[in-house]
Image 1 (cartoon, rainbow, N blue to C red):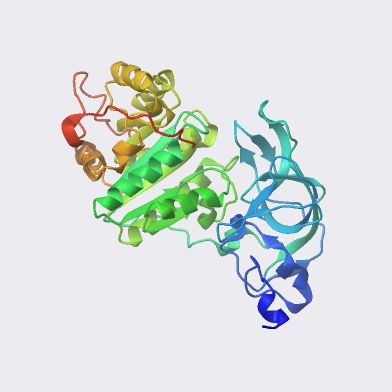
Image 2 (cartoon, rainbow, N blue to C red):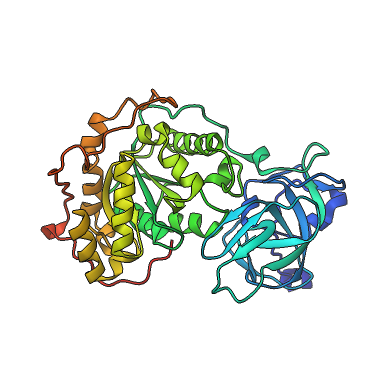
Length: 409
């Protein structure tokens, strides 16, 4: 066995890097760059950073984010002096950082482990470490002299969601870490165990490989997120751009011939971009049922009230609240909705029951193909009849949750 056989090559760099830009090949490429492909090279210049632009940066000081998520799912431990390729992006994370794309190509911070460079404005009081400090070294360019941008490698934009569209369920919640991603993952698993091909997409948020890998592990046939539509983050993007992402991702899932679609909307319903999407005629015309994740019963009640006021078809509650039998009882009593924990969602009969619960809404909503900014609100099955009771079938007819591990959104 020679020395060559003992050499461990761990390259996250894509193919197509120019010979005179070997530095890019040696750098660690973040998961936000997973769609990027050659030709690629180092470029000099004084461009103003824009969301999605790719840059080569040096790690100067290790702070809150001590690891970088790579395109293959591995978490690379960062060391001072490491060179990494990341994307500029804004970030909205109530439990971590608020950050914006800097105005100049100078020292900034790594504000997300998925590989997002920005200038941190504030962070949660429980975070005792400052953001990891990085210094941009050079732009990453593609075929032109301009900085390469994630949009250059995105899926083709779709103007409409093709018909027929599979039944579509959405998971949203009170805020970050309310249990949305875990709810979506266990729902996907339950539908998969029922024999369905499930497509999943995370519509909004900040680039992170962890969520997409979790949903693949849960059995989703196709997994997409806003990065596939060309964004490192959806924070501060205009409403029309979020709707473009929504239409493009749902459309590509529909084209993949899946039997059902599960979507996750990041953060809470009060967050600006999330609220704008949920209130849009496009959302109402596309979504068959909503599952709301919250941390406690009061959050569940507030979310239920907000969703009903906006005429959205809420069919069940889940999230961290489901870990507490007492909180679950309070939530069910105050809203009249079932609270489903992760084990409930894993049951094929429960998962199929959630799809069945959307039938009434699907019959009353406008045709999916007719979507306009002036479309009227779509009636919700939970609000047009005060005494209407929504029933979702589960084994034994019980939603009593069993105490499970804490769910993290």
